Length: 313
Image 1 (cartoon, rainbow, N blue to C red):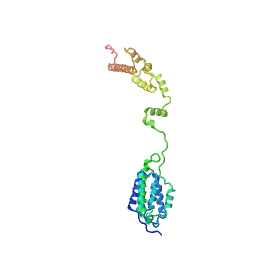
Image 2 (cartoon, rainbow, N blue to C red; image 1 turned 90 degrees about the horizontal axis):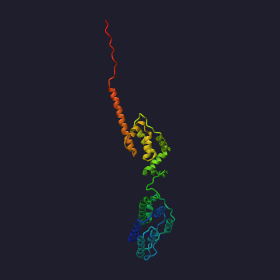
Image 3 (cartoon, helix red, strand yellow; image 1 turned 45 degrees about the vertical axis):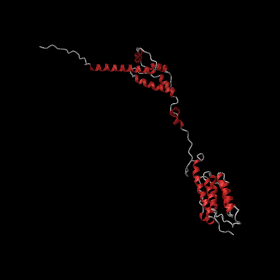
Image 4 (tube, rainbow, N blue to C red; image 1 turned 90 degrees about the vertical axis):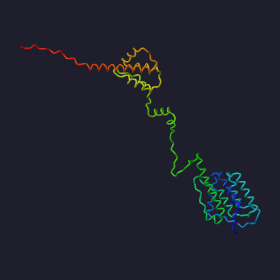
């Protein structure tokens, strides 16, 4: 015949609470399904009444043994917590009474075969009215363990970056695959090569070589325009060397600049020196031509001699 339950000693409750709190720093997420299943079993009305004590003294508490098996057999339990649970069982065996749960085997079996709860699922709320009728102490312990495991889940879930992002939304989708644009950000040469390959002329170098070979300066033109176009072409064909550039530059000049360079007393070792002297001589020539034209415009026009007719009588 069931009798009124006597609450466990204060020492036992403190030892169980200490063990649960010690497990907080070490318990992985695999322990959450056990608490979840325990809460569901309590909601379904699993009998938790205890039978009358058979004898007093010398027999350890079934409640302490039950939570010792639940927590002590868990692989994430620290050695210190297991030792404290053992001490609690020994003390309970000396000064407490035997308390048997009629549904203990069913609870243990349900916890052992509980399905694993996927990550992200919420723990089922405990039916406090049902549990409080059977055992208010057990209700308090279950609430503490559920709260601790919930905090552990929230703290541990974002750390596993290899499996899932730190946050989830119902409409979140996996990113689409795209090419790695590292060459656009890290290497200028690779970027330029890729840009020319996609949008440039594949025969640009050969085309620039042909234009440079056919480049000729007009007799009445300016050396500055010839130099600008010559520099633009050699920037596309690569490095030919200074002597090759000098020969090609001389070959494209008009006869007038060539005659001016022939009368120049020194030789040129670089293309820059040759273009500077050629440009200077061309500027002098055009300034001289402007001066001649302005002088001719200032001279008065030549008028013919006036014929005189003899007076008539």
